[in-house]
Length: 123
Ligand SMILES: [Fe+2]
Image (cartoon, rainbow, N blue to C red; front, side):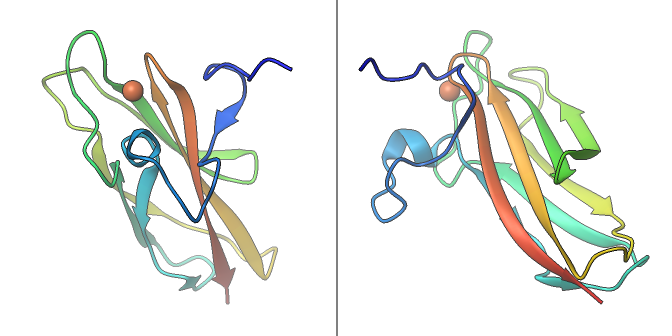
């Protein structure tokens, strides 16, 4: 069976115990609290990636999105060379649920979508 292309779906490391250099350059690195209070703003620091991704006109990170489940909370677009794919977002989670999955998704113009998820408890 042929392997799926990088632009088919959202990419994650194939083996979480053995993340490749290529994967480390694309996976968003996310720093945020593991527990937040409903209705109280909190910060999410994001960069791409653990090994810095190139930032050239022909190969760059186009945007970063923050979602809880399918709900879009923020989207930041980047112009290559002039802006680094690093951002601090201030989000507010309201308390309909006890926890939520924060999904940070980035798009590389050559290598597609990459996602990092974090479970956040909501008090
Ligand atoms: Fe890339």
